[in-house]
Image (cartoon, rainbow, N blue to C red; front, side):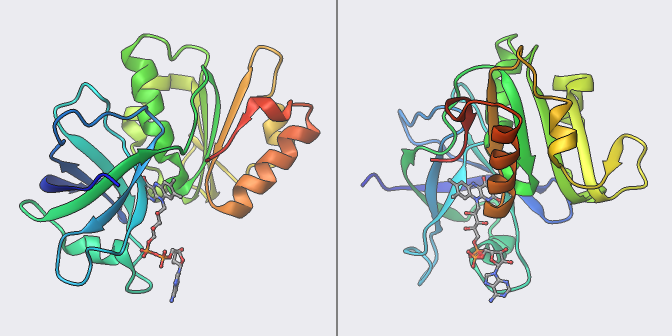
Length: 222
Ligand SMILES: Cc1cc2nc3c(=O)[nH]c(=O)nc-3n(C[C@H](O)[C@H](O)[C@H](O)COP(=O)(O)OP(=O)(O)OC[C@H]3O[C@@H](n4cnc5c(N)ncnc54)[C@H](O)[C@@H]3O)c2cc1C
């Protein structure tokens, strides 16, 4: 198994509980947008506690980037990442699976499940190929929307937000259900990408199938 000790170069909070890490890129380290690696913190006793995170940088960036939701409700790995800052080290491993990009489509994300779509949509935007893609993004609250400004710039009206509670006219209130999905399922849209908590993914996949989307055109985390 590949193993690289890499320095944290910068960190920033992008929402109240999502922290972004810019880290050193090992020589020749490459990934496909949507892929992930196992990460641990290079501090005594934490080196073997591996957790998967998706790259949100692109291959032609000088550094790697992760965008990580911090759970403060228990002392897991992400809570420890609160204290990982510039100059500290992470350990990263082989690049693997996650979301297998096939082409423009409807991206359906629940919360931090949006991370593989950050890299994929950044790549589409950079390549001038984002036209035709849409992002349907579900969150608990408006303040949970990750990288809202950037998605608005990249996607315009094709960035659709929904939250359990919303007082923002641009964010619908409620959940993604079959009726809402039906508005975005069309014969022009070939691929449907889903990423989020297991229950969310399961519900979205069932609804898409019931709306007539072929299973082979529904892409979930591998
Ligand atoms: C392929 C892949 C890619 C991923 N990429 C990303 C990414 O880019 N960014 C990102 O933010 N996440 C990503 N994740 C999810 C990420 O790996 C997990 O959020 C992370 O491993 C959680 O680690 P943890 O130790 O903090 O929490 P864990 O202990 O693993 O717990 C996670 C969940 O369980 C709850 N929980 C567990 N134990 C307790 C307890 N005792 N009390 C209360 N609640 C508890 C937590 O609230 C949380 O909801 C990815 C997951 C996969 C599979």
